[in-house]
Image 1 (cartoon, rainbow, N blue to C red):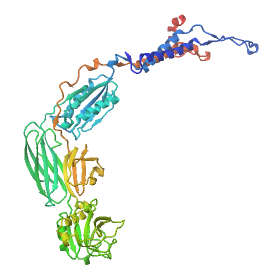
Image 2 (image 1 turned 90 degrees about the horizontal axis):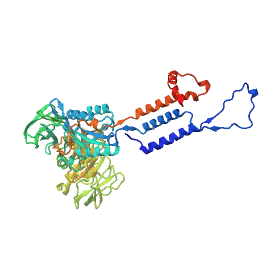
Image 3 (image 1 turned 90 degrees about the vertical axis):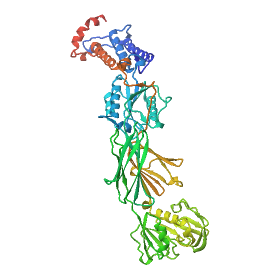
Image 4 (image 1 turned 45 degrees about the horizontal axis):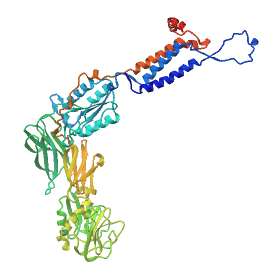
Length: 637
């Protein structure tokens, strides 16, 4: 028997203080004489004030004793007196239920998660009623499902409502989280119970030194036959804009050789197939090509039955590839045709300046060495605009100007480093707050950009510049900057949720990298050793933009871990037997509070009537029997 809220010394001190006050009230109670007179006319006040005499003894000791006992019982209830010993008080346990993707595997009519739920409920019912339990659902991130509570039905409901997730469990992080919860919120240190298959990635497995001493395992069978798709990558062929290349990576998680038939369909029509023979634990890829320029859905599926169905198929959405339309107004189309035909993402139409239309049906308008009467209503590329009629201020044209620098922070000059190039003739643009300088020469700015237009003071297809690599690169950068969405190169990848790592191309500016989730919400990322890394624990679409390239990740595949944790032999396993009777300590504060209240009620019924005024002394219901029963005791007092 022990107090949970107070020590024995504190309880005795409080009870002694309150008891002393009650004793003083009984001992110092004043006595008065009652005098009867016929009328106030014969009342003569005394010259001396009446003397108040203190009682030398307590007139009602049984009343005081009942009150002291009742106060002691109420204080014991507040101190939470418990039956048992302090080492048998209630403990706080953390139940970790493995809700990773592997737990969706089936063994007959039940999944691995169903087996883990059954073991968890059996363990929960073996605990003493006073022990508190916190349920944690664990996949890549441990998530508390309940607080520390003794409400067993609520905890069982939370166990039954658990569903398998899409990521692999991180055992090391889960154990650290459970230990931290016990340290912060627990009073009596209980067990950390892991219920599941304990299948995790190699880097997420705990070592024996990192394993807490209070761990208990509730294992379920995890050696199952399973083959799954790990990754699907779609990209357009560099030589043909309408040719798609499909790469499908398949992994064998079984301990036996598996034959995996693979079928690929686009818009429900078959476009390719393959049969892979996989060694235990091996991963292989299949490459399939098909041609289309339309948008649609591509599905890669393993035609087989195994333990996990979710990783047997992946569906990706292919975007429609629209070519950027360019309207070129020039008298010498032969100078620009080689530069424009080199870009397979656009289609060019040529017309003389006399047919100029400000609202031509195109995304980009190229104006070659003339000044139109009306400013174009589309984004435009001006090549050697004349000083008269040009939309921006210009200086005197220069001959034999020498290029001295590129502003590589602007997309038009990305990757351009050539210097000391001689320009036979070039227009020179005056500095202005409305334009950004892209290229400079010893005569001044020779390439500038505004919000909706680009201006080249020289012709990239004339003179010595047409033999330089700078000309096609400058033209491609300029058109890509004017129409970024149409010129963006796209790759579509079906990936599993979790940690994503993407190798970046050399020369990619880290400031231009963006990772966007649903509704264009930015996702945190890092760049380490030339690799872009980010994490997503939920299924969905993620777009990664690196300059002019966009990679679309369809995170629809489950993250299946490849390693099974071999726990040390010293770790306790299974549901304990007979624990409830061996460690129980019972809380009795409710009964103490009821007993204290009953004693106060009895004391008031027994002695309280004599303290009331005469006009209020009436027989209360049920008190006559009690009065007759207690008459011998009252006479003795």
